[in-house]
Image (tube, rainbow, N blue to C red):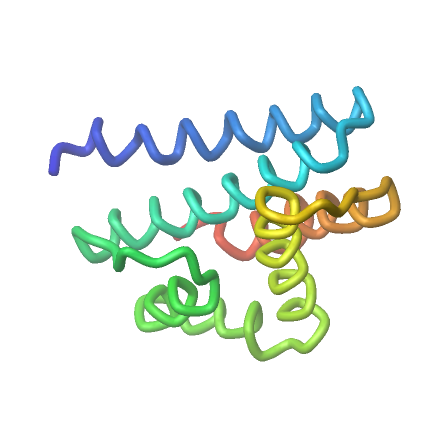
Length: 128
């Protein structure tokens, strides 16, 4: 796959993060959670594709992180640290809930997950 095609995933991931921040400003909490999830998933798939030439057809953050750990063991902290794993699980669960169930997210649900995504998740993945 050409590098330019791979980079599309990174660009889309970045755009989803920007959209999440914009949606937070508009207080559209459910949509912000979906955008956060899409950012995380596409970023993981971008690095998997970049490092492996492919990625599994999964939405599981844990499965994608385990694949990346083979190339960068420090990423293991994302799934071994209980608080990190809890936040990643909350992002996955929130995505499913926002799409398929009649539940509403609140500011206090979204802001910590957005902060975690930017300060921990993205930081751990940077430099791969």
